[in-house]
Length: 126
Image 1: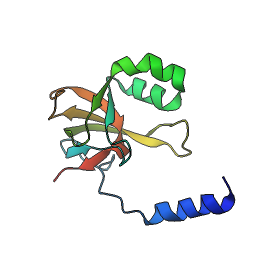
Image 2: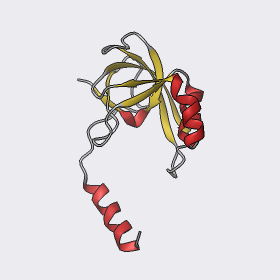
Image 3: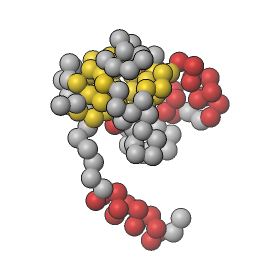
Image 4: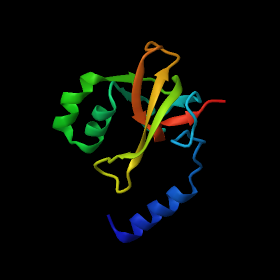
């Protein structure tokens, strides 16, 4: 990718509106909606914080081993924020660390289940 293309992509991303999201600044008990991004909006909900960390840091072989430990929650699934762990996720293709969030699902087929997601996959539910 050329420098001009990278520059244009960065400039575009700076002006794309971002919906309000819940992150580790949110208080436990805050209502949230799960939504990853507009191209792949469903969210993987992991059964442990460590599996979330391993999945984000690993490649395809790691993902194949870990996927049985995740639920695929549809975009818009409601949840309640339980806890946050700031800057502990180190995604393989991202320079900066990200926050992890412990949640309890409150809608959908997995209602009542607990899990861990990337905090960027949460939107405040008003």
